[in-house]
Image 1 (cartoon, one colour):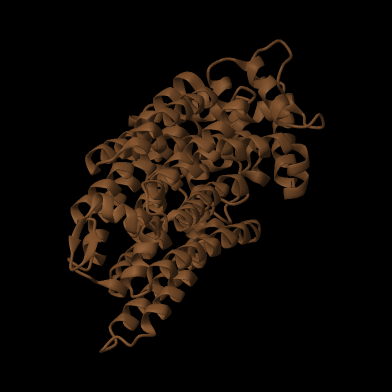
Image 2 (cartoon, rainbow, N blue to C red):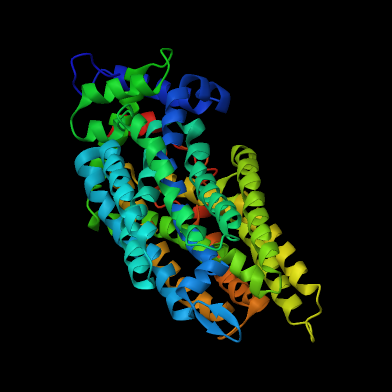
Length: 520
């Protein structure tokens, strides 16, 4: 149990601490979703608030991808080809690369201020930088200037996807962990949906406001975040690791109701940190690939890159893809909105699956369904003569694919990210996984414009073969490597990884944390 003099909870020899710790862990296991939500309503609220940054991250590449299908943007930034204005594939690639390249650097860099200054003030710094960098995009009147704005903006936006899941996984109890970390995916879909809605609304304008308005709307989120940022409680995990035990206790009080035993919660945090120290778990980037952490980083990186390899980057080109598949421009924009609206609803529905089924099952079964849908799309596009109804059939299947994605590997990836990373290197593990995902995303960003551009490969629905094949490889990996982490405390997960339990045995393995703590 935590002491009252500001010291971190320590090990004692009389067994009292072990009993209290066992009771605290048992209590956390017994909490239902609704009980946890009532005990930690402020933790839920602040986690949702910090995740707004992910909405900004998703909004930016979505509007860029849609602008390639926007007549006024094509006219102002493109060249004429067969009576129509076209953005060169090379520039489509360059502009789309700005964000993921920035994410690689930004994600890796973010771990340093997160460790030095904490989650709260790193978030604040990123919001201020975003507010300034949007000016470059807003006033850009050439592809060169716009590319600079996208690249610099991506550097900051890449930080949000590390901050959001890290904060959510550290301020909520186990019963809420899956929901609040998977909320990151809902923020992604929300940003993409808003991007589609805004560009669909401005696409008919015949002035620069057709693309300037979407850029300007990024300031809206800045205006929402700044007033509340000073009231965000800092992560108690970070505060405890910095030796600021009393501040960690105060942060827990701010995150929970008066019914929560703050000292017992602090004892669990301290014991988990102590156990990782005894396991020689450091807190540098090198430590993410040392010992058992190598496996944990591999899993985190693997599930995140699977999102890209399964075909999710097509969403950024959704409107353009539908247009090239044969739909009229306005129908393509409308289909893009419907595409993401389905994803938004399915992400919410996924929370019921997360509460009922395990992480491993949701990920692997969901991925299998995505693979099947991709192959069907490819087969339809291979019909000789390509009948007129194929374009609508492919578009409908992409809607179903997106729904299946947001029921499964979309949200569950962020849950696995938070649960498989060790607490001492969580921000760095998520940063490495984000950077790896962005690197694979860069490859897709280079390839997709050439694969769907009518002046290049013009693959249309045959992309289904490409992504279906990649998905098969990911499914084989996922079956053998992804463990079941549902219903485990961070300390239990540390022990399971330390004992090198095979992925398929995680679910049924019994762990006596109190006994292990007494031994060590």
